[in-house]
Length: 187
Length: 315
Image 1 (tube, rainbow over the protein chains, first blue to last red):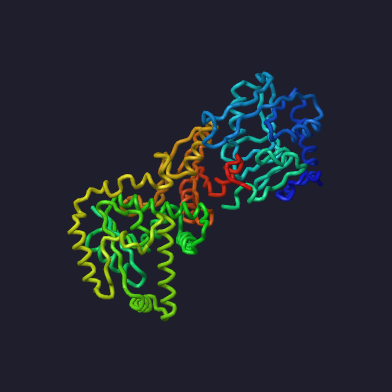
Image 2: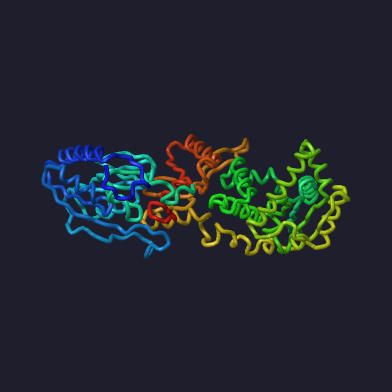
């Protein structure tokens, strides 16, 4: 199941590696069918998308391009300037392009909403969203999701690219991090 | 304008004296019953209030942050009440909150243990042994509250302006002495603002911001601004009930309105299980205004949000 990374004791498996792989295979086919008449540009949102996107593109059997974007994370009162900003922008001009935003997880929708507004302003022909995990129960900002891997419950998940304080991204499955690891055992 | 605090050793008829005093003076009585109603203002129902009381009275070294927030918010609410009207407050560490303030009189009611046990036996319909335990537990709780909130010793005579031995006085005599003290100290001449001046900013939840009601709201607003999500704070009050004369008897003002999402958000720092009153209001609002989108953000939602950005202290 895993490569003995010493992190598993804090994590309970939510979606197995096999289930993730199966679903990504299906998603690849769905995306290929949707974009068969154009050259899509897949834009991955770093860093949570990294493992998902690299596995996903291998399952999309049509020509495509890839690019990445990264947004500074909220760090509470220490957030410089108090506002989000793009820390790694696209290398590609997306005006007139068919863009598919690829997320590891959509939670409150704050980050995805921020990026969508930013990309929309650049005039793409189409702009859609693909996410491996959708925590819809916690949504605050509405995000139209065209391709969804799994709808997940309101749990703090890690693995398969998703982190807690930059750890656990290398777990080959999606797991739930125990509450006491993140301070949630107080609630 | 005045605030009278009555700190009664259990079995000294503090409740009755406070009620009669409030009646004589035309002051608002803040006792067990009205305190339970007051706690509803912060979405703490009776069971929640009991939980908070028990956590403090157990004397746990580590009071969890939510319980502490509740206890401090309740003190905050008492201070807010004093801003608006004259009060007679029974227990609840009010002598600590209003310590050394102008316009206040702090009364301590005492009596020998035997007298108090007898009183408790009659008023609570308990056996002698039960009454002994009852007064001991209650006094321990009062002492721990005061120590927890203000680091003060309940028995410290310097906290009180007037101490009355209730085994030697009737209730009427005690009332006359208290009223004489109020007159003698010219409490009625003290402007209300000087009673509460600088009191509210000391409270934990109000310290750092003038606008938002609590820390969670401040953090949430900061979060919305970070992601450039337009919002308004408490922009609309929804009428939930009116009386026969058309006067509003129940209303609800959600904390945030997200303009682009057309979504109202009500934040609470309480556990979901304790938020019965707010849940009921939101259900009512949904029924009366089916086109309104509203979501309650519970304590766990808020902690989740913080945890997502690594802002909670994990292991």
